[in-house]
Image (cartoon, rainbow, N blue to C red; front, side, top):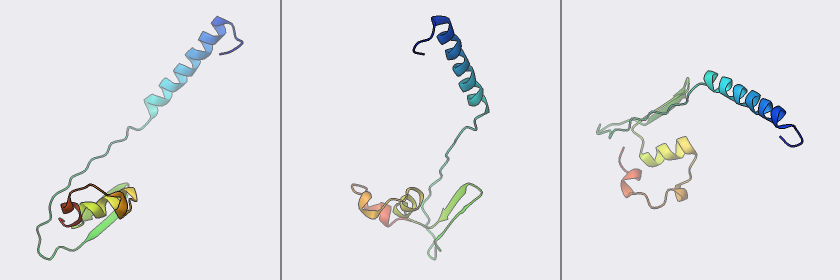
Length: 88
């Protein structure tokens, strides 16, 4: 708080801290949960959808999942084990 008296600087800092604290109390916490399982069905049909803030996919590879969720390109998935492109 340049150019202010020490008392005014502390008061301004306290106001800012109070505002940030109040905003933090009302902020919605973010949480991400993932469950990934191998699909062993012989006639597995691929399905993916995004509804009401929830992404669900069935019978897709991990490679496809990363491409859909993060917008990754195939060349960006280097160094990964080969099964990410084959196992569903």
